[in-house]
Image (cartoon, rainbow, N blue to C red; front, side):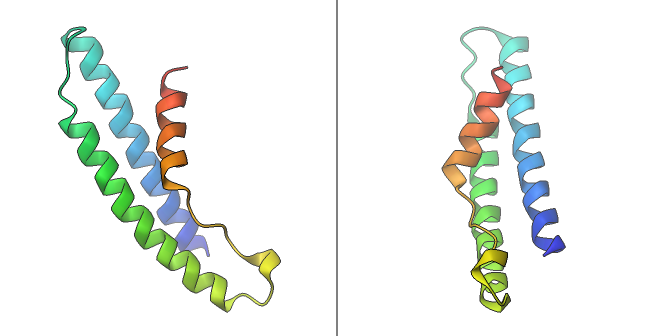
Amino acid sequence: MSEIRDDLQQARDSLERAWEWHQMEIARNSPDYSDQGGWLSAVERFKVQAVKIDDQIRSYNLEVPSPSFQIPLMEIDQEIKRVVNNGDS
């Protein structure tokens, strides 16, 4: 279970760093800066990681003795929104 949590945290951290970098690039360049490539690539990488993590979670959930010990699957779009919204505050 700790491997799942570590992988999840690494994926979140990577997405947060990409968002911070993207925001810095916007601020550094100009108001019309629109190069979304790096951010969109980071989102795609996060989605791929999230699918793999969800697979790990499903396997783990099949092994635990009770539903109360199960880990919820990731809500990928919610994770992305959380990063974007926290970065704007």
